[in-house]
Amino acid sequence: MNKTVMLAGIVLIFLGIGVFTTPKYYSHKYERYMDMTGYNKPYGVALAAAGALFVRKSLTKKYKPDPEVTLICPKCDEAFELTESSEKRCPKCGTDLELLKGFYERHPERKENGEPQRQERDM
Image (cartoon, rainbow, N blue to C red; front, side, top):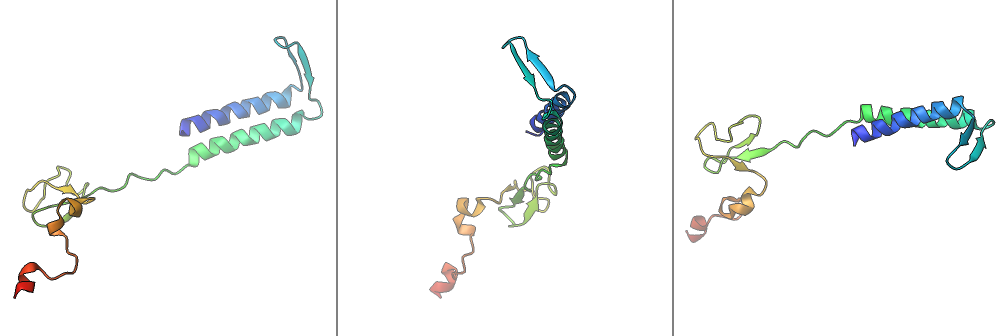
């Protein structure tokens, strides 16, 4: 999309310059003569300004970085960012890491929900 906005801006700039410099136009295809002598300057400036805004928008658009991926070790419950452990193995125990998103839905027994453990309730 960034390249499309820039291309549209460049086309508008050249179109505005063309309208500004050439107020009279004859179309051979449609056999029509257009005279924009009174309107060519404001119209040309407006088109060029719109094109400049498009180009500026495409150059200064800030993209959101990719969301950081958080991984968790199922053995020692340690969370890591993907940049910390690029080989996707726990640096402490060597177990394969899993994505944190959806981890507790896949392992409901690991979820701490505030209830006492079964062994503590039986005592």
